[in-house]
Image: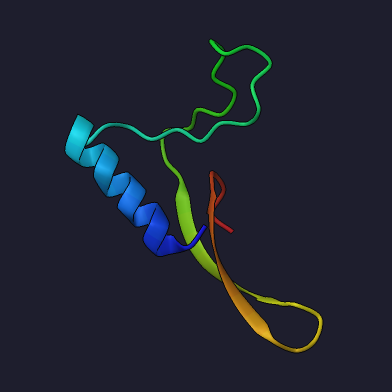
Length: 66
């Protein structure tokens, strides 16, 4: 997913529901169980070498800072 698509999706949710909390989830074994629920996330654009020398930037969302 491109960052522009993610922003559009988040803006749509915000317009419909206000400034609500966001939680990232793993694949839950139960539809009622929250697997990943951290208070804050780091949104980090990082550069990756694809092996051919070309650099690709990916926006990672995770609960740890590095």
